[in-house]
Image 1 (tube, helix red, strand yellow):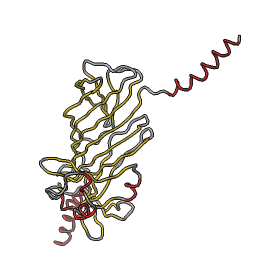
Image 2: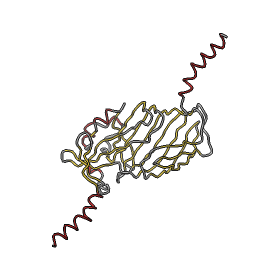
Image 3: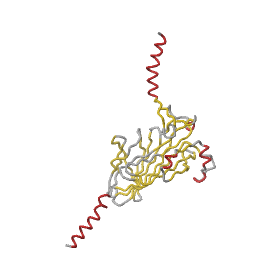
Image 4: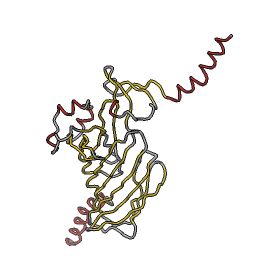
Length: 275
């Protein structure tokens, strides 16, 4: 009888740990986001996870800002690299199938996705009469907690040639000279925030390194700062006009509203004038 009681107690102690164990443990998300001249984003996204069950696909990844086009997808694990296939499931979410491979319980793996997101991540704004762009990015969210999240936002700002050979060579004076303004609230949310460099398209570009720890389920990792509007002269015509107020943006109007005004109100005013 005593032995039975001990077994029951042992089972009761083990049950909670078994019950709360998820299908995977999300260890680290690593994102390189390259701001394009038109405000779109080229992204290399990696997620490292410990599989507790074994699987041949990830049912749902997202949401992604659409339209999005995937160029490459891989699964890394056990010293091997396997192709993966990405397919839409609706609502900005995508399924990732591991081709000809199945993960094994107790092993660590990394999913790597390369994609172009044609959403606009550079929003016109102003402060003190200075025309700026609010540049931002946040990667996909997960229904499970994430241990560590890193976003490297590569800005369209070229560092002085020959002066930056190490990340430590980037000085506050260099950042100020490029006209960069941080968002104190956004910066303070991070475990680590630093300016580093990335070699991209023959240039050494200023990059924000932003790190967060222990994101909750569906946690958002947003990185945001401001650069001079002149840094992206080829940006497409404004979709909307906003003014910076310190705590966010005040909405003033959309291009659609202006078009409606031009098509409806202006012709009516002209007809009235002719009368």
